[in-house]
Structure formats: C-alpha cells, structure tokens
Image 1 (cartoon, rainbow, N blue to C red):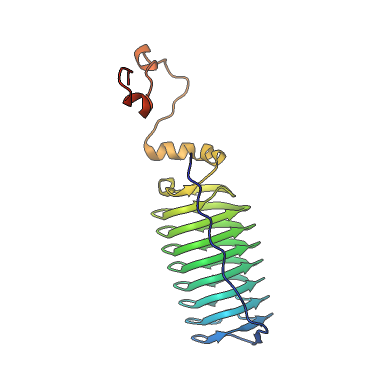
Image 2 (cartoon, rainbow, N blue to C red; image 1 turned 180 degrees about the vertical axis):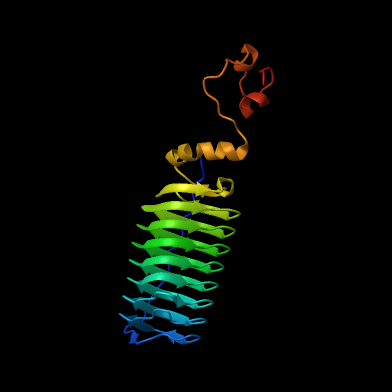
Length: 244
C-alpha cells in the first residue's frame, strides 16, 4: 500500500486585539501588532522589514521590495501586486487570503507554516527555497518553479497549476493529488511527490522518455519463449521447489 503524505501544519496565528492602525511600512522597520488597510505601498523599498503579529488588508504592493524581510504570525488579505519581491525573506506562520499576484519572486525564501487560500498567482519563483508546511487551497497558479528547492509537507487542495518545474528539487510529502496539472517538466525530480492514477497516466510518456523506455504498439510478436516469461514475486523466489 502506498504511503500517505504527511499533511502540512497550519499557520499558528493569534493576532492581538486591537491592532494598531498605521498608514505605511518602511525598510528595516520593526512593526508588531499593527494593521495596514487600503494602503498604496506600490514600488516601496521595504527591504529588511520585520513585521510580526500583524495584518495587511486591501493593499497595493505592486513592485514592492521585501527582500530579506521577516513576516511572522501575519495575515495578508486581498493584497494585489503585478510583481512582488520576497527574495531571501523569512515567512513563519503566514496566511495569504484572496490575493492576486502576477509575479512572486521568492527564490531563496524560507517558509514555515504558510497557507495560501483563494488566490490567483501568475509566475511563482521558489527556486532554491527552503519550504516546510505550505498549503495552497483553491488557488490558480500559472507557472510554479521550485527548481533546486527543498519542499517538505506541501499540499495543493482544489488548485490548478498550468506549468510545474521541478529540476533538481528535493521533495518530501509533496501532495499534488489535489491539483489539476498541465505541463510538468523535469519528471525525473518528482521523487517524494504524491499523484493520482490519472496524473500518472498523463505523465507516463514523459516518465518512459526519462527512463529511456521505448513504447511500441502493433509490432511483431515476440518469440514464444520470451512472451511466456513472467516475473516472479519475492515470495515465489523464497519458496523452495518453485520456479523463479
């Protein structure tokens, strides 16, 4: 029986009430227990920002740069950005809800207990990322690149992924069975993933090509001595007196 993937742990977020309203964020700022609502933060340099136990709601983060930022115990609700820079950032216990992000630059990011719900994502770059406990729910993702990333306990529930790139990725308990997948590149690096039988049928030609297997139908019949050959089970080989 196939081993079931371990489910991602959910973000542990317990925001204080009331949150302190603020009007803007700043680079290298240190904010705790705040709420930023309806603010235009487009093209702002927020490099090194430390944001904890806080909420962003209905904000425009187009072109915002949060490289090397720390987001911990945060909620991001209805955030929109055609491009968002999270390169080298650390995210711990973070929830994205009903967000629209065209390009998410998040290579070298560290994620622990992150959830993304009801969101539309264009190109998601998680190359070289270290991700543990990440769940996507009801999300549409155009292009997901996890090349050379380390992913553990990642799941997709009721999601669509048009293109998935996994070159040199290390996967452990990555559950793709809840996603409709289009093009999957680098099938040789899917070890550690969970897929459905229907997904396996779709991937079969790519897996055969990767393994150097030629599939040919309607050819000449193999010699009888070969066509009658069978592969014995391990039990059969262990029992004396039975042919292998």
